[in-house]
Image (cartoon, rainbow, N blue to C red; front, side, top):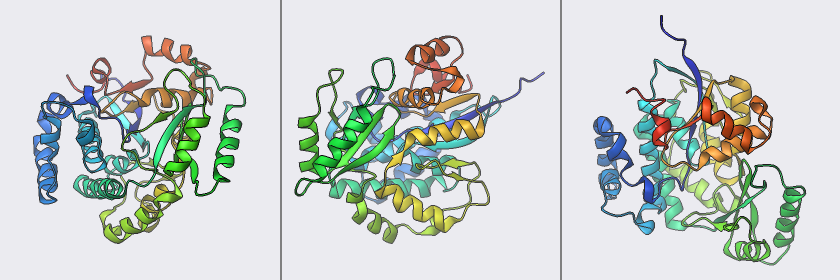
Amino acid sequence: MMKPKQRALVVCPGRGTYNKTELGYLQRYHRQQQSWLSQADNYRAKQQQVTLTELDSAAEYSLKQHSAGDNASSLIYACAYCDFLTIDQDQFEIVAVTGNSMGWYISLAVAAAMESISALTLINTMGNLMHQSLIGGQVIYPLVDANWQPIEGRRAHLLEMMAAINQQTDCELTISIELGGMLVFGGNELALKQLTEALPLEQGRFPMRLFNHAAFHTPLQQVISLQAKQLLTQDLFQQPHLPLVDGRGKLWSPYSTDLALLWNYTLGCQVTETYDFTKAIQVGVKEFAPDKVIILGPGTTLGGAVAQSLIAINWLGWQAKEDFIERQKTDPFIISMGLEEQRSLIAPQ
């Protein structure tokens, strides 16, 4: 007798997830997806860009080349989409899809709201626009302590600091991403300089400036939004086959989505307003009650943000980091395909 399928919420990664340890990801895990990768490579070659196969099979990881927006976005998409294709559909029923930041674009492909190569067109175009302009940047700073408990008064203090910086001449600073136990600030160079100088060192690495990242999800990207709407038309979109949760926590339902609204959100406020990944995860588990949360690769950095988002609503009775770790030891609720030992729980052997 076959075991019933487990319900899974799929989470798509954003920028910054393909790093030195991920070099060769496509070669290691996705040789069987060569037909799709060839289509993607042909698209990139026609744009006179380095192919994804060339990038992934490079002898060494190059921070300058691999993290640049015109390369990183499409490379991460290819890894994540191919990961999705390898999920054992006999074992899992995908009940909804969400993502972090650029992961929203990947979600559109996973949920079939775009054909996979149309999604590559979207992702590659946005990556190019961001790379060419590289308006502003991002800085990340924690809201929680080492046990993933909220630091009393931290959020209020950071918001006060942000407001004070915005009072200064020529400074523009806002919240780019709500990322579980982290805040990602987006702003222009002068504002980010003020912020990093004012913030105390935390956990030996924060405040952390994200290399080659523009001020995503802020009003500074208004010009990118306008350019994208001129280059990318609504006919790239289609009715999703799976429910989507966007960066506001809004649901987009299969077969009843207004494609004009989806186009406008994707290239409009998704580009210029705060991306609330925390809410997206919380809405995803509340609405769909998954048995598992599957985080597509590459990278392993998103698991903490997902767990922190769940701890904040006491999901599964989790109140702290130790609760999450204990559950993961015996029956993982969050499965990251970027982890060798966990992807084996998902992909057919």
